[in-house]
Image 1 (cartoon, rainbow, N blue to C red):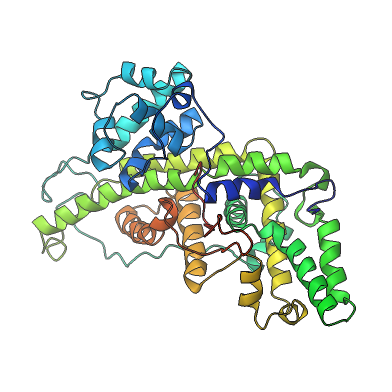
Image 2 (cartoon, rainbow, N blue to C red; image 1 turned 90 degrees about the vertical axis):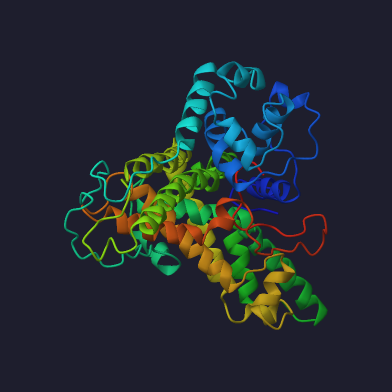
Length: 435
């Protein structure tokens, strides 16, 4: 099917998604991996995924490829929480061991990855809640200014995002660009680019069945398929190729794992907060600030920033805007009230299921929470947190992050049943890089 002016065949992004959903091998391989006897792909705990993320990012490998190389060299026994602790322990596994596991990796990249992995695994130092050694914005033991519960702000979606894309002509990495990338990642996971072609086939088949000619809606969708243009969002259509889309999305698929690594640091900070509150349950009433120092969490946010910066390199911002715009337009098409009847289906939901797309209210909430979390981490946490409010803000961010764990750790259960191929099973609308 034709998906764009110069593109033919199945979109590259969806062949990658289908491969991920069926558990196929990722494109990256290493010499160690090719000789590994570790098969099938190993089970990986959430802590393990967060621990190996620096290796995934720096070596440009999938989580499975990194894990297979580590297990093949027998650095650890399993890709579980215990294995994660051993892997990050410099006394247990040395630099030479990592070099043996990844013989083809650039030495500088490997050393940086190992260093980042060990630093991220360092526990927060537990300090008694009344100690002056803790140095948050308001020193422990000092007066506490009334701090209302912080709410992570919403970000534009749907019509708001479409309007923002149309009015913003900037190609800088800003909130609109980040939100566009998240829309692109979701469209990639769901295979939204295939929906128009699927609708055309359904409408043609139904019209033939009832012995009626196709109507104006059929022609409208056909024009969208043949004449996809992105001038409205300041993108030259000639630059939007299948190869560039695939390159951008391949880089972006590491974002959930990068978010998981950041959240692991935030989790440790929250555990320290819980410990402080347990040790001094009436501390707040007595005017004590129990929030741990935010420094390590603020620094860890650069993991997410670096992932996005890498994806946006070159024409990344343009490609993100193009895919997001296309996705939003396809959503508009799907919302046309006459489409279910024209495709022979009683409801929009059944029509989408026929096309292999199944969405629930939980998916919609997940999408909004992911956008809020990632945009806030990338744009506010590194250097824009309100002074004196770091503690409440990070606590609110932690609570929000707990709601998107399935996306970060690759266990989202949204359905996208492939009606004509049982091998695809359920397609994940929030894919993790390299799966």
